[in-house]
Amino acid sequence: MRLATLRRADTTVAAVAADGRWVPLGYRDVGALLADPDGPGRARAVAAPGAVPGGEDLAAVVPHPAKVVCCGHNYAGHIREMGRELPAHPTLFTKFADTLTGPADTVTVPDWAEGLDWEAELAVVVGAPLHRADRDEATAANDLSVRSWQRHTGQWLPGKAFDATTPLGPVLVTPDELDPAAGLSLTCRVGGELVQSGDTADLVFDAPALLAYVSAFTRLSPGDVVLTGTPAGVGAGMSPPRALADGDVVEVELVGVGVLTTPIRIEKTGTEHRECA
Amino acid sequence: MRLATLRRADTTVAAVAADGRWVPLGYRDVGALLADPDGPGRARAVAAPGAVPGGEDLAAVVPHPAKVVCCGHNYAGHIREMGRELPAHPTLFTKFADTLTGPADTVTVPDWAEGLDWEAELAVVVGAPLHRADRDEATAANDLSVRSWQRHTGQWLPGKAFDATTPLGPVLVTPDELDPAAGLSLTCRVGGELVQSGDTADLVFDAPALLAYVSAFTRLSPGDVVLTGTPAGVGAGMSPPRALADGDVVEVELVGVGVLTTPIRIEKTGTEHRECA
Picture (cartoon, rainbow over the protein chains, first blue to last red):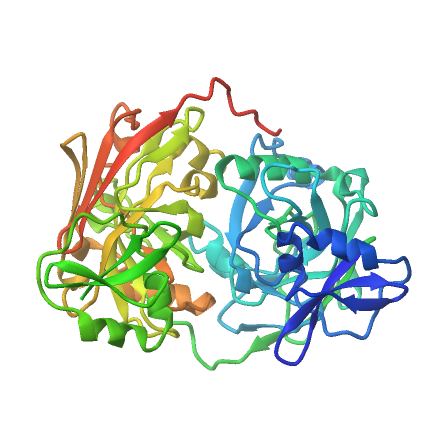
């Protein structure tokens, strides 16, 4: 089953794919659908196989999660090639709900937010309350990161939480159709050039492990989002480091889920950001 | 003007202090009051001087903020005594809304959450949208931190976001009555023993500076909460390090705002937390 959040004039609506078209359901978005115990069943009664429909303006597949938790340093191959030990614990940080944006939206940052970088990721969405790690759905994310602000201190938040910089979607795929643990190809292209190529089977902490760890300290609810980390090939790791430029187009593809296509706009402010210190 | 969120049978209600009693207003909580452009004016029309009323069961003064941003390493005296440079940028991390709890609530953590520590803090609550840093209200917080989980990796989130571990309140005081920049005494006592004694005039990044920095990357809205950091004297800094024990009572006092009284309960689980790696 494939779910999406469609934009309408002043609102959004959750929809399920059936016979190559989107069928709207009675929920504001996919998060609201998941939060209703009857929601997934109502969607499944309508769902039908077929190509994923196009032509709609999609919002972030879950636009208003209460919690967005992200994991860094989580692809074993990349960690080993950097000569580091595999970590004993996941490295976690957060985003806000309004850090998310739609799967085809332009991402705009001001020119003083230097070092905008890509990070292709598998994201999972909690499908049921409590610790039922078997009930999560898969989607894709691009954890676009402002490296200069990420490095202001040891805590990464500022560079990870610029408003509307994390495309999430395009659709949510239920586990009966897709098993990230069995390995999904995850790639990122910038201007058509392949810069990241990973496989979700290479995750140190897979989705059930991350959900178990996070839910040990904080309750997770249907619709909460966990980003699972990015494989090798980010701009910050290149020599010399590479940053996204105005007009670049970034494409993140998670096979079985779809493509996030993100035009980049660097806003000319004519000012430096004034530091507060 | 002093505002509080009072607990009722199945709900909560915002109230304003008037003549030594709490007068309920037509809002679910203080956050909802602040989110209504007419809310502060409606409260001010009722407010009157007098002692802060007692006898009520108080919720976290803002129980459902969309964003909770916290600053570490922010008291100049403590930074200098550790032989470090004053930072150029605030060190920021987040909590979730349900990390907050009431000003007299018991805080319970499982016994595998080792190293529970106190952190007395001034918290400010955003009073208006946009970047109007002059419109913020003051309250107190205890950023109770699970040091073992805080140190699992370089990112502090897990130790800072155990559910219902951050007392916030007891009341919100508007800036006409209280100016943190002019210096408010901030103390923490454990079992009556003074362990922290600071002054908000010693903040490296004061409330306007923090609000300006945070709002550079993410929108802040009325009711969002910023914790401004803690002065010297936490348990982790003692030799040997000291952790809170079952039955301890922690009192955080911000003069002009009030006292957070927090009984500590360490839940005996009889299990180790199983790591996911």
